[in-house]
Image (cartoon, rainbow, N blue to C red):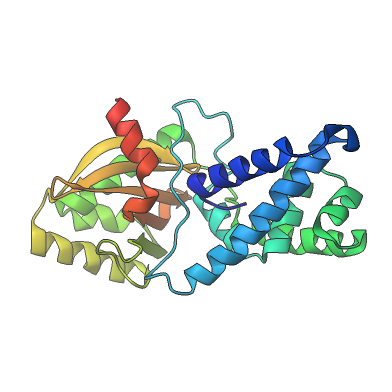
Length: 269
């Protein structure tokens, strides 16, 4: 619902506090009751987040969620591209889709939760489903292939091999970089293979080959990628949207507020 672990944890904590003050004998179905509480808290948070995002500096990306080596969810179930698609939905569309299509709640229960009638909820979920289906990868990338392409991309982009990089990038590739105004990042998306090649060629010319070091290859929100450090200190994650063996999207998260989980992972290792 929120695209942020920290925000989700806050909502769960708030829901628990409210639940602890409820007379349990008056609750017929605890699951439905709790879902209603959490959904309303999420809707409030989303409205607040959208207001804050109007003043967000540059591209906004969801907080990167690092997967274990053997993920519990298939890579095509929850991806960065899907999270961005959900972000484009209205809060009610997002809630209706997740409650109905992901958690399998009946329409009448969702209607009660959202304060809408069942036909309206069905329409909300249908519109959301259409957007989500358009964002899902048609051919999910194999993990071994994804790892190979991610490693090749890092080596070419940060080593100055523009010939290899050109073969890796799709013609319509888009690079988005989220610094949140806290660290340097590209304000606007960089679109098109030629512009992206010029971007990385310019960075090599300015900083030299090896200006960024690979810390760890990882899967981020269902996409292959890596954690890296720029100039030995600035941490970032890069997730790659791959289709038909070529990179369609490059999602770079540099905002330090979104990298707390990444820092914890590295400190634990």
